[in-house]
Amino acid sequence: MSRINHSVRIIMSCILIQLTALASEAQSRPQTTQYTLNYFLSNPAMTGLENYADIRIGHRRQWSGIQGAPVTTWVTANLPLGYTAEQSTPLTLPEEDDREQFFHLLPVERHHGIGLIAYQDNIGPYVSNCINVSYAWHLPLTEQVTFSAGLSAGMQQLRYDASKNIYPDQSLDPVLMNAYDNKVSPDLNAGIMLYSSRFFAGASMQQIIPSKFIDAKNSLSTYKREILLSGGYNFRLDEQENIHLLVSALARTDFSNPAAINLNTKCTFSSTWWVGASWRHNDAVSGMVGLHIARNFNIAYAYDHILSPLGRFSSGSHELMIAYQIFKFDQRVSPRVDW
Image 1 (tube, rainbow, N blue to C red):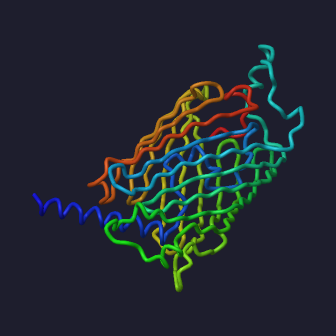
Image 2 (spheres, one colour):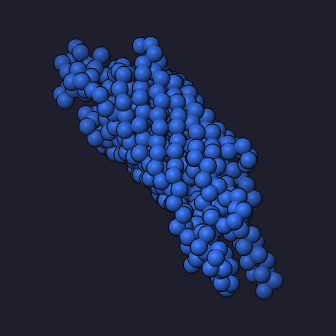
Image 3 (cartoon, rainbow, N blue to C red):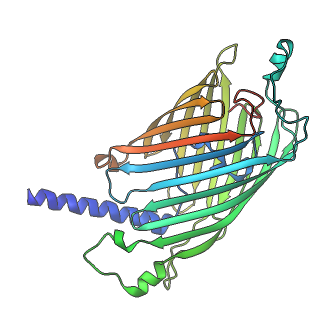
């Protein structure tokens, strides 16, 4: 029995070392399964997309059962700027004869958007905090297609929590601790997007400024630039357009680690509830479900079944997100996009 316990401790130590390496070498942005519910997280060009203010809170607990596995919490908020009264959503329902037009998608007008992103990511002994403000400009190219470009900038903080040292019985070198402790770095991200009511395609670059997060001499621990590519199309499956199927993909790479590829499907019923599935290459398959609890309040949950060897030690990953829209009359009325 003691040999078995010893072997388990060795395996868990190896996992923790891998987690520490993930934090200290890759320094990728936190991943989310439900990226289709918050493109704003991965591309600042989506800032102020819709005709209402949008606030979202998410929490992800990755690889449950493994000590030191990533735990991420984020908050985002964004809203459009530059509306006239004619473009705003009506405050009362129209007469019966005008309702068909009333529930059509609102055309996109030239406008701006501003937003805020804040998150905390915990991986083993590392705690990463980030806060960014964002801006985007939306320019219609035709009656159906719009181009947008955006920037986000802010600060990243990384600190080392000695109480979560993977070797708690060994003291840390004070010189090394000074190199790890409370490092603050600038953060800059940019993106572009082409979209209509039915499709979207975009590209973004994150962590544009190459700064070290460990000041130790000859350290290679830097925030790596990441390129993200995304795209999707929304199919309407019935004549009444009550059932929509969104098929999308997201790929990200920092050109030093294997590219991460996500494929996602999301089927929405009567603009009220939805189910979905996702696949990440060599990582996980996921099931998702969401519900519009009220006209301005949504909730969604995702569960990841792990496909990698870590699945032997973990029961999976869990992700919860809630969303609240303000300055919005009804979730069915006059959105800009239908995906």
